[in-house]
Length: 187
Image 1 (cartoon, one colour):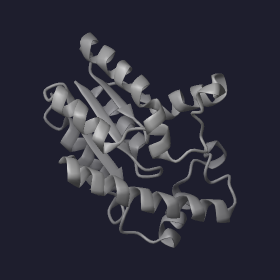
Image 2 (tube, helix red, strand yellow):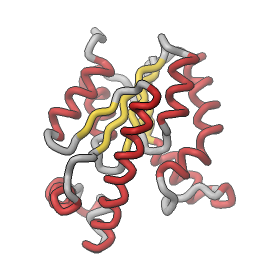
Image 3 (cartoon, one colour):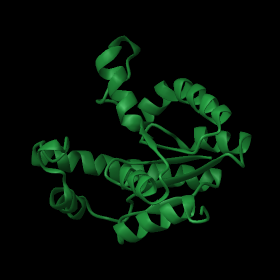
């Protein structure tokens, strides 16, 4: 089974993947690692960290589809997490492989920029955190963009019948619910 976890920056995608790894011993692959491989290794492909997540998803889509098809043939349980998946792409995959793929999207549509920035700063990963090392203005701008992107993702999930979990109010509760949705029925 492939477990796909997508959504916006700072919505809890990696936390879900790490929780599944710890609880179920299912490894994960971060699409951020792949995107940065394109960014740093083959910049001529035009996939870089300054693009909006939907732009990255569109550019990486054919690569991701080929990778997922190969992973499904292998049959190993795996989590793929990252922003670079859009509801339409995922809906097509689920329709094609309904018994082999489970998916959740996470975002935050019901929180103010000010409150989310405070949470990001409070729970950031110190010097290893790419966002909290930026200026306050950059962080506010990024979070504002991600709230707008969360709304786009939520609408796409509603349109395509996909599960969306909002981490605005009860972050840890939403992470737990999304994780349970994905792997709660596994032994």
